[in-house]
Length: 154
Image (cartoon, rainbow, N blue to C red; front, side):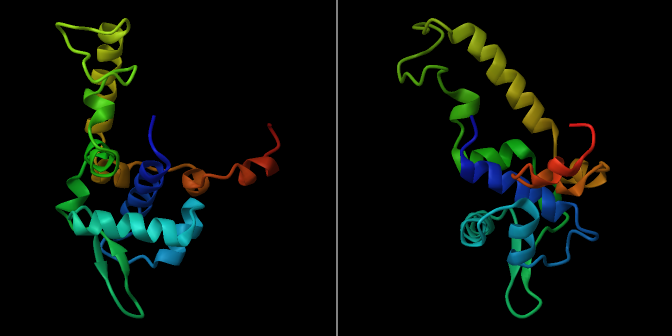
């Protein structure tokens, strides 16, 4: 459902929000390593989000990406819309252009319920909410399952 770009954007923004304090510039190398992302790819994503005002950046030796107090109030839904557009929350489940309440596709009404629930869930989590939630395992933001291979209960 979420594009690879959006998945990386969400994980990077959550990672930055978990810093103490979130206003500390986080180098792109650290972000890429921590979320298991190609460095150039996540740099481009964060630059796009920075241009849109969702994250701040500073240049130089101690530069990186950081979040202001206002940016900590951004919801995951806003990040999804900024990277993937609003199709996930408004579009047809079959990808049809003509689908509507008056001319529904076969799954329209069930899919509408799912869209509304997703909108509610992603809209209810802000970066600030996530900052205050304790994360059992910081490596949970990594794409790779490598850390799980060493757990004894697999």
